[in-house]
Image (cartoon, rainbow, N blue to C red):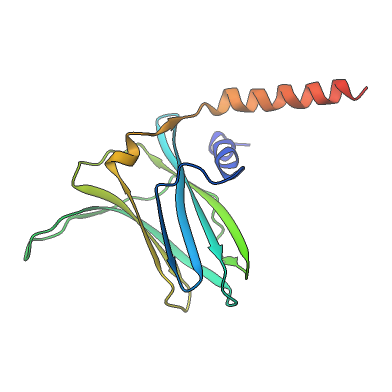
Length: 166
């Protein structure tokens, strides 16, 4: 398992915590949570829940940095950023009453006070698009995780449970 995959499985497991932003439309809700820093990379978890009878097919997810405030007739600056890690499958469908947790990793970035990382979640052949934001104040509270020590702790715990069963 690669280092990114270990981080991804660590963040994808467990309950939602430290929610940064959430949006809801047409019975579909998304949360950004578990912002973390590992190996000088920024990771976060995106939870998507479908409470409608209609399945939600994820077409694509777009990540970009944009200015929060723009004055009339002022050119806006958008900088698209591409994840270096994602556990999102190419064709992800969220069925009725189901929830999925997906993890994304990026090269370390920072935002000024008047910028935000925008996350756009688009539905294939539909109009239930979700828009979320991560602001600089959210990045100030990044939790540092060390996947090597957490993986070693998991191995130790597994060995102890095997030894105790004899």
